[in-house]
Length: 444
Ligand code: NDP
Image (cartoon, rainbow, N blue to C red; front, side, top):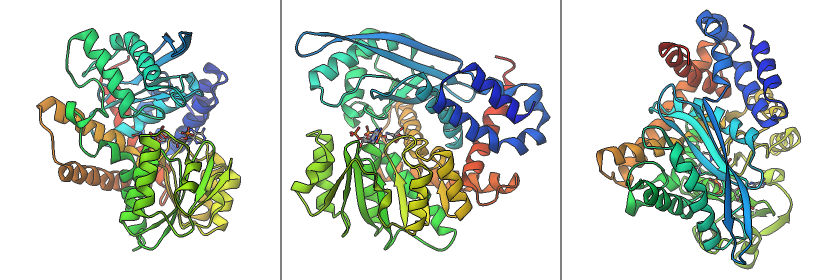
C-alpha cells in the first residue's frame, strides 16, 4: 500500500469533499516513513480504515422562528473513530457546515485527541443553522429540536460532544436541558457546561490559553518568549478571546482581532479595558467587531484579514483556510517568526509550505489547539468522580498537557526524519497510538 494510493482511494470514494481531502492529504503525506517502517499498517489497511468514519448520521432539524415560520436545517454527527475512547469533538453551528467540513474536523480530531494522551476517540457534528442574528428563543427552539434526534446517538461512554463555532455556553445549556428531559439522566454527555451544573473551570479559556502555551514552548527552544512581541489574532470568538488574554498577560502586544465583517487594528495593542469591552460585545451583546471603533482607539478594515499588519506572531483563531499562500508571504515579509493555529486547518497547504520553507515556528492545529479538548477530557474526569478541581489545578494540568504535546511533536519529528517540522511530528505521534489500538482490537 502506498500513501498516494490511499489518498487517491479516499478522494475517489468521497467526491467533492475538498476540505476532507485537504486534511487527509496533509496527514497521509507525512506518514510515508511511518508506513515504510511498519508493514503491519499496510497489511491491516489502517490508512483506508482510519479515513472512513465508523458512523455518520444526518437528520432533519425543524424549528419555528419568532414569526411562526417553520424552518428546516440539516443536523449531523460524524462518529469517526473510537479506537482509544468514546467519540469526542465539538458541534459547529454555521451556515457553511456540510459533510466535507465535518469529516475534515472529525478526522483531525482523531489525531488531536490521541496527542492529548487522554482516552478520547474522534467525532464532530453540527448543523447548517447560523445562530447569528437569531433571538435567544429561536436558538433555544433550534437546540431542543437538534437534541431531540441527537440524544439517541450519544452518551457519556459513547459520544460526548462539545462546542465549536456558533456553539458556546448558551447553546450547550439548551442542548443539555433537552438531553436531560429526554433521558431523565444527569450525566457527562456534553462538555463546555456551565460550572454550576458540572462544567470545568478553565474550559472556556482552554483552547486559547493552550495555543499560547504551545507557542511559548516553541519560542523557548530558541530562548525566546511572548514578552514584547507583537501578535496578530484573527477571530473574536471563544478561542481568539482567550488567546488574546493570555498573550497580553505574558507581556505581548495584541494588535488585531476580527470577525466575518473585517479586522480591527489596534497599533498600540489591546488593553485589559479594551479586552473587557470585546468580551461584553461578543458574549453578551452579540455585536460586531466594528463596534469597537466607537469604544476605543482602533481602525476597522472592512472585509480584510489581519495578516497584512507587521507582527512577530500570528495566531489564526477564526476558521479553516483563512491564511492562503499570499497571506503567508505577507506575514513572512512583515517579520513573522511563529504561527500557532488556534482554529482548525486555518492555513492552506501553500501557506504551510511557505512557513516550512522559511523555517519559522509552525504549531499545527491538532497540537496547538488541543488544549480545548484536553480540558474537556478533564471535565469528563471530574464528572466521573463527582468533583470540581480549582482553576489553578485545571490550568496546571492544561499547561502540562501542552508541554507534553510539544515534546511528543519534537520527538516524533526527529525519529522519522522531519526535525523542526511540528506538523509532521503531530501527525505521526497522534497516528501511531490510534493505529496500534485499531490493530489490537481486530478488524472493525
Ligand atoms: P466562535 O464561534 O466562538 O468564534 C468564531 C470566530 O471566527 C468569530 O469571530 C467568527 O466571526 C469568526 N469566523 C467564523 N467563520 C468565519 C469566516 N468564514 N470568515 C471570517 N471569520 C469567521 O468559535 P470558536 O472560537 O470556538 O472557534 C474558532 C476556531 O477554533 C474554529 O476553527 C474551531 O474549530 C477551532 N477550535 C475551537 C475549539 C473550542 O474549544 N471552542 C477547540 C479547538 C479548535 P463571525 O461572528 O462574524 O462569524
